[in-house]
Length: 337
Image 1 (spheres, rainbow, N blue to C red):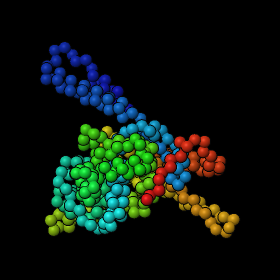
Image 2: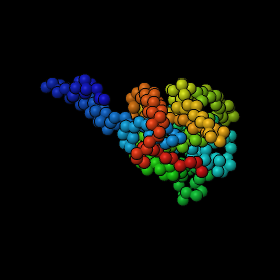
Image 3: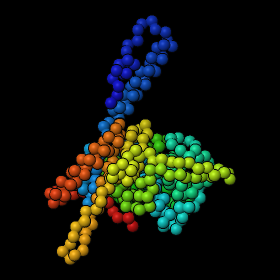
């Protein structure tokens, strides 16, 4: 919500006889105030959704189809494309990547202080990207994998070829309102990446089915290394997701940019429900709640509320016999190939 007192202060009528320089200064303040007001209206209220992953039951949502920037939640797609590429190509995550030129222009988080020419393993870059929200690591992963993908992408640059695969992933998951434009989610171009809370829930559900991805995002911190010339440089990177390790929270990613506002994708997992079968065997029913909060000034507060109320709503739904009146009540995400 824009600060109305601030706007009133900036937009007072200028007294007669004020010097031109002072008027120009005050006019500049008026422009800033109007910009502040405009941002407040264009961002609008937050969007959120809570989905039980195994059943696909949507238990809570608000403006879940509103298209908006998603900041570093973009890196979830980056990670999955890298992991899928590494698996299909037989590439070890210990393979060394070189930080490409131009990464110093990205801005935002660069916790390792990476510069062009530094060397880092794909695994360490993945930790820095997913835990520390490292934009340079994201660009490095995209460049390295993109050079392999590039050969079948019709002359695109490595990063463009990689982003094309990110969008292929989105289409395959039914993320119809999503467009990725870079591997890190920063606001750095005229064409902005965009998605919705519902689409990001699809991506998060899919990502958390990947055991390798799960292992990365559940870490609270990790000591990682890179190399500059022949010197090894080590860092302790901490998970930027403030709720990891609290209660049942075991992932996945947070983000924030000026256009997107504070965002969070979160996984809360409980022990499976064990049911004995007439045959003498047992049936396990997994329980994982995925929550997405976009453009939320209090992303951790709303996430905790979504978790608490989401689990309560899911338990009630189970007690009622899991009724489904409309297909839209379920979010069905394809299984990994």
